[in-house]
Image 1 (cartoon, rainbow, N blue to C red):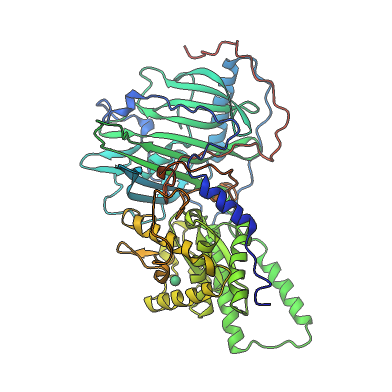
Image 2 (cartoon, rainbow, N blue to C red; image 1 turned 60 degrees about the vertical axis):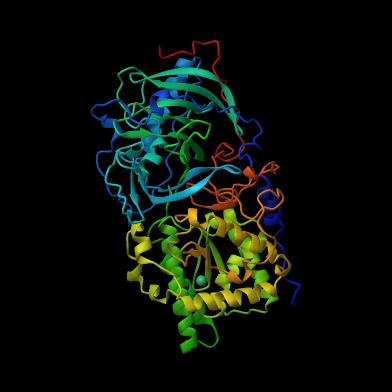
Length: 616
Ligand SMILES: [Zn+2]
């Protein structure tokens, strides 16, 4: 019994080693890597644009609240009617303009969750650009009249008063505008048409499994400020835009439009939904005075959050009738009552976090996490009255917490862990809380405590333990690990903790937790410190020493239904210390495919001989 039931999660291990080696180039495993040359945009590369009245289209009218709370879930939009296959590029342009407006209409009632994580960069002679500090924004994106964001987090002291678009405002110092990072969900919210833009066909290109037609898009002269300037990829079946790459120009005075690479996914029939936006600025070549350098990932999810009633009452009736038939209908003992009470609180919290768009529904990743927890349990002879469950928090900051018997671990933390032993280590701390009976959150068994707005989640829920419980959990966690299949692999955990310590001073936002205890405080890692000296010294030049991974390499979220799954990547060899990029932000390169997997026969694309330069 003692060792017969534990198992390594083969799938996770395979995936871990693959990801550990693929840090170099997220796009390198694509079958048809496009040459994605960013378009030079001299108009936007100077810090201040021409003086003048800011264009109306470049400033959202007002911060409208996202009126989602209590709203029922919306039906999935019906796919648009099929169109006749175009025969000229002119017709293709008309089609994708029309589809773009159709997408805006379909998404106008949606208020998905939007997260931006940004790392400012500084040059390291050995490692190249490395994070110097970071920023984190989490909110809801109102896809209605204007594209606007409403934050889950309290605005920091630096203030977000200015609502200029395009990201940053430079009066005395750089201020990032969260809205700016999500602006490229659409090319142009108000005037994406032939009156304002010239379109030039460039070539055909595959993005993943999807054949695309590539167009350069330029604003016509005097068409106003803040117009899209760049390139779009249009799939050649329904003629939806699937990727936008470029910037906005010209910029209003004292502000700056940064460059963006925006990706959409075919998550519902007929529509490609904005999912990822990568932003990057900075030039580290010799002689350049570096005023601004950063990398930022914006992720959008929670388009189809399930809200409200469902069949809860029916379920209860069914459960009651089953119990009534049992031989001895017994009253609950005080201990049983306590457990049922805690279960109720746990269920309330998990359901509320899921409907707020912060927790993935139960899925494949949980099976892997539960296998690791099970390995710790069976080798330590832990027998709990209720099974331990696991769930994935959809956000980037590195955190774990537990609610009753449910262990929650963030997407960002799973991403950066180098191996299964490190995953077991962070889970063991939460399992220790559960074993030691440090149950938090029974107050949430009162349902009135679940009645808050989604944006108020972080103000209304919290699962931080007192320092004494943290110390006790760490001590117990080390015991659990030493009895477990991971006992021989704790050197790797030590390495991970060292890598985390090395970057802790620069990654305050990534290490700021919102529901659980911090992994580090005051610049020092405080989790599992007994293991932090274990293992070899950190050595960036040892290419086979992978202490921590970049963000985004492990967990893939479906932005429509929030389901989490493991990323499948082919190994890519690390060739220099710069390829390791621990805890860093990298560009997105999703493998595009059509809804439902197998693409039906493709409509014939128009001949390239047709006049491509349609705008002039
Ligand atoms: Zn803890």
